[in-house]
Amino acid sequence: MELIFIRHGQGLHNTNIPNRLNVVHPSLTKKGREQVASLRNAFSFCEDDLFIVSPTVRTIETANILASGLLHPQKYISPLVGPRMYPLPVDPITHEVKCDWIYPLEEIQARHSDFNLLDTDDLSLWTLGINTIADTQFSILGRRMLSFMQQKVAGTSRAFIIAHDGTITNYRMLLGEQGLTRADFLGEAGWYRVEV
Image (cartoon, rainbow, N blue to C red):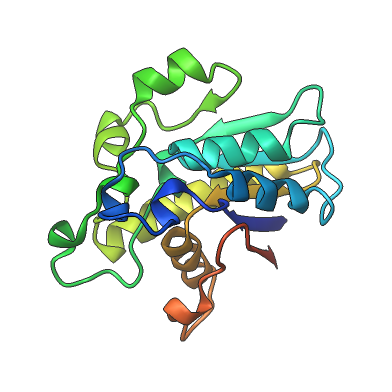
């Protein structure tokens, strides 16, 4: 299975404004949209590709830009690829920032009906997300997401996971990489390919 992790483009919370990390549901900036659009030159997206997206405005916008040339893109939203801190601090709750709040399920259903929603049977995931959960709990949920991807990608091309620096790094660790630090973060519209 080929997984391609993509970090969203520059968001409003990534700009030099006061209290930038406390912007609620930040969208992509003009620069961020351009960064993402340039990724279409790096990949030849096809109808078989699977897009799995974090429930945030900036990742939804990123997926829509990437899949814009497809007639029937397979787009999914799951809190299991939502914002997640890396490394997880001793007291993660005190380090939470508003830009990482999950976009409400009801808003997604109303505004983004072209996406399939995953994990709706666990509404706590749609309110709390995976940002501050213990590593052991993330490991269980992350493996569940990887299993879903394996089932969906079987016979298709690839899975693109559009998420956040910390989330991507946590999944890379879950897939067996060791010694990763914040220096390994992808940066705006960065991507990382792995075969599993």
